[in-house]
Amino acid sequence: NPDEMPSTDLITLTRHVLAEQFRLGSTATGDLTSLLIAIQVTSKFIANNVRKARLINLIGLAGDTNVQGEEQKKLDVLSNDIMVNALRASGKTAVLVSEELDDPVIISDHRLKGKYCVVFDPLDGSSNIDAGVNIGTIFGIYKVRDGSTGTVEDVLRPGREMVAAGYTMYGSSANLVLSTGHGVNGYTLDNALGEFILTHPDIKIPSRGKIYSFNEGNSCFFYPPVVNYLHSIKFPANNKPYSARYIGSMVADVHRTLLYGGIFGYPDDKKSKKGKLRLLYEAYPMAFLTEQAGGLATTGRMRVLDVEPTSIHDRTPIFLGSKEDVQDVLKFYEEYD
Ligand code: AHM
Ligand code: MG
Image (cartoon, rainbow, N blue to C red; front, side, top):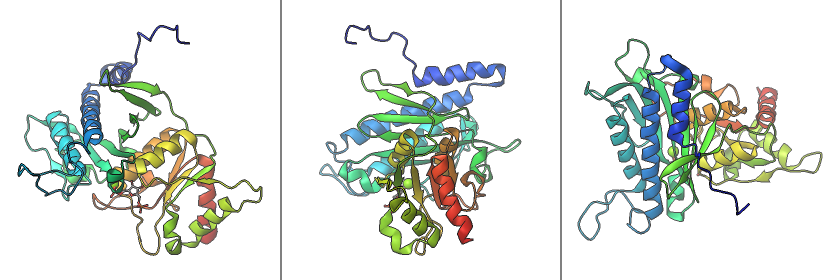
């Protein structure tokens, strides 16, 4: 209704996470709230850079120099720097793990050391950057173990121990989707206000979907359970095959799966023996969000969140999405094993 007054009671991300802190009462120190606020600022900064990337020549190879002789940073390197700087400065972190960095960053300055560890992929879907397709930031948060001063062991823990996880998708708008373990909420960046506004409260995945999202170009390498599952949804007895949607940007493919239902999969295969996606900062956060939204996330053989990591850049196979769709895949694995 065009005559309707604009809302004077916007729920911003900051307000929403503060409300959660108040709900927890005296048990919450506000540290996680501060950390989440720092993360949302990085998302605004990265979103802004993604948007103007073409104009200011960020697209290109890291190490290139521009006409002024300044070194240009590729968007994923820049995003990594933005996150490391902001997370360190938040004073709430002890260990940072980034897809862009071989080694974990251990915060040693005692004035800045906090009790949280953040694992992140600063800009996922980099093959899509130059084409202007959706890309995103993925993050997961652990609390350091009791008595630990913050070591790599604090992040070599199964995803079920994360205290929060989320992603920001940089698309036609920037969407931040977050769970602190009490359901999933989605926020959209209002560019004029510079605030993430709650637009998708309590996201729940439909129990069954109509969309499958796999890189079927790898079919010749797929193992029988995956081949047979895909066949079953493309040649169904009821003549209602699933639709194919594959963007090749995990954030975008998972975002659609959370909202519309269906299944996203990146299996292990004869070529990629452990799959492609990274356990800590891709699979765990997305599995955490999917479960919090009422869906399932499996490797085909076990719950993703129960996998024990052995190193920070481990990979894992993953199938996630609507409960019934993921259960269908699991049936094909049970038959095969
Ligand atoms: P990246 O971290 O190098 O960007 O790779 C991760 C991306 C995911 O976003 C996406 O799900 C997957 O790789 C797509 O892989 P493929 O191009 O093999 O289909
Ligand atoms: Mg990635």
